[in-house]
Amino acid sequence: MNAATKITSDHIFDGQFESFTKELNELQQLTLFLCGNPDRADDAAGFDLYNRLKNNNNIMNNKDILLIYDLQWQLEDALNLSRDRVALFIDSAVGQNSLIQLAAISKPEEFTPFSHSLNPAQLLNVSDQIGQQRPDHVWQLTISGHEYELGERMTTQCRQVTEQVGDLLLNLLLTWQKN
Image (cartoon, rainbow, N blue to C red; front, top):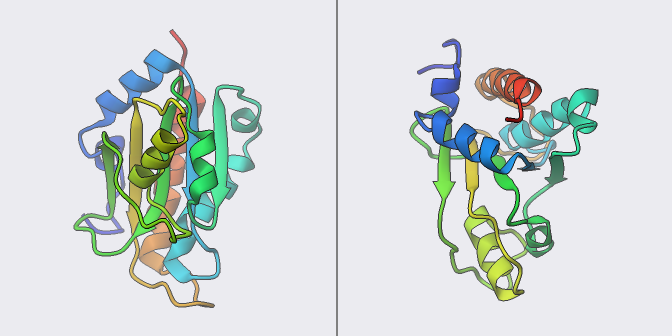
């Protein structure tokens, strides 16, 4: 798939759309963790998606959707994990085989205590360490990035993919119906 290909929910959720929406419909609450640095080229993907979602009044006024943005995920983000919510982490990533990937995260991962930047599996570990009940349903959506130089603009390919992912996320969240 290249950036000119129209991205569908089958692409964005890589065959896992049914699992994701089933979990979302069961719990009926979603926390979106988005991260990225707008000053570092393709790392801005999460920042751009956050702004797009934040500027939609229907999303911001929906008490069942919580949007959280950081330059990078940190220890404190574990406090926003909740057992009664689906957690979806969104960021750009280098070195992946497809333009977008969605993967369920099922188990915690060790981390270096001196690190100030954590991945979602490491945040689950922090949640366990502080005795917080972590969510059973955790997902990570990554958008392929290629350039991360400070002061550079997002590449055309990453911008196109990010815009299409944004369209699909908005559509999903705006049409998401509670049973």
